[in-house]
Image (cartoon, rainbow, N blue to C red; front, top):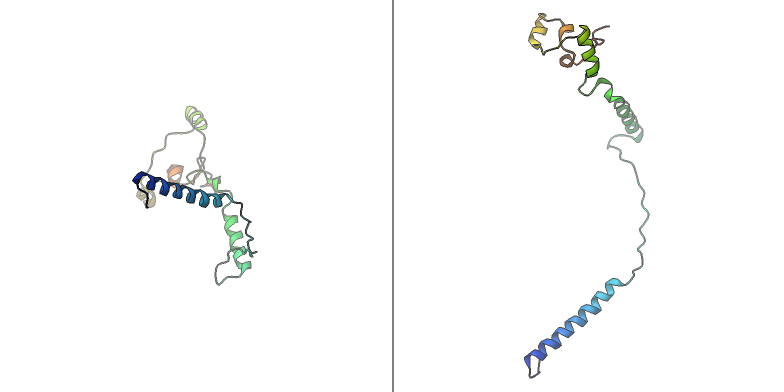
Length: 131
């Protein structure tokens, strides 16, 4: 810069930078023409070595197996409501059930009907033990 004063040189440089930025940022606000995407063919996933028909059969079988998952209760046993248990307890039809030693059941010392339904994964009314 050949100006005699140093401050004037800095101002001129700053003006040039501002003008350059203004011109370059103006291009960012220009509307661009939308690009055209080429058409593609979408295909479903089929594992290698399997025909689409075989894969559909397997998917249908798995979907059928996933129906009615809650029928056995939240933990795999058929439960009862607390109100029902209290009513049966008051009538003398129910008793508190405590976990038993599985080894004693295997040995035959404890009958399966005496194992709490939650422990054996059955139903509270013992309907799982009836043929």
